[in-house]
Image 1 (cartoon, rainbow, N blue to C red):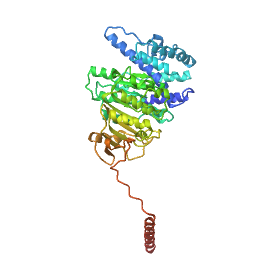
Image 2: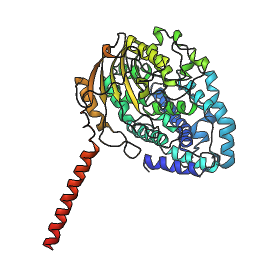
Image 3: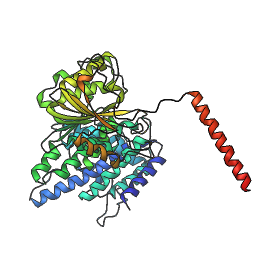
Length: 485
């Protein structure tokens, strides 16, 4: 059975269960089951490695809670051992009252937050088992058991399918969209920023970790393939923070499937941190993010920032500027109204950005880029440490209406990437000198000077005269046809 069919079968089972009733629930429940399945393979691999080295491996989980003992006990010939297999109410009771509390306790036992033990504790502190039927859960476990996690090609296919599930969750509407930034846009942003091995990459609004996993793929593909580089990429390159429980778990799982064993993702409210406390050791070379917009933060949260505002994205932007090292590079998706809002905080934030960073590029995305979001966005590309003198604008125009059935693709981004390197002037792009900005508003949304002007509207009498001429022409044609008949 294919991976894709297995995922579909699990979704079909969850649909029948009364406890999981949305795409968000499906992926949350699939995630905890897959995580434990992955953990079993990881422990087996480590035990095999230890045995080859003549050492004994110390298992993370106690025997009772290992996958082969509670989820899939088997006989010596590899068949399910029905004498030991829990199912029905007994299985749900074990999962809810023993397994989850045991795994959640790892959060207190772990040496530090950057260990697989801590991630186990966090995941099972934040998620609940929502599968109410032990018979359905039994079938889900059997499907998960059939998924191979060992080879890199297996993991690659699983990560691809998991990304598809995240995308579907975003398309499902409600609050699912917050988890999904179109991957072609992410890849284009990374291509422009060009992160290098040895640099630290950060997303303070990590969601499903789409930016981090795409950056991992980009860097792994281009780096010199050495054990040291791979270790650096795995352990000391990608960092993130996420507030929401489900997004945190999905992000962790997404990174694990991409081959990062203990992701440096912290479950925290990024905006709860005072930016005045950010020191050099807390700063990053590269920041890639699509912070949530439209939220209204409370006054006590706003106190953590120099420019007070309730707008979530504006607070995140301050956090990102402060979190960049001097010379560090950022690409941030933000609502296009950031460019022109006239309230004091928006003007002050644009001033701060222009004075402390070189905002060298603004990419204007078409409506419909974010399925179901109903907002226009831009991407700000900037380097910290020198003021902005000129900005290259690019208005992306794929030549079609964007939407769920016609989403952004990699080909749509090719022209932007090619033109970025040349900083060309065209009907879609132009350079603007910051000294020409209105100093009172610092409005960053000037009109494209290269767009052909529309023809002036004609006067009513000219339109009437043309209509009379067309009527005469039509009468003449009809008369000719009658004569022919």
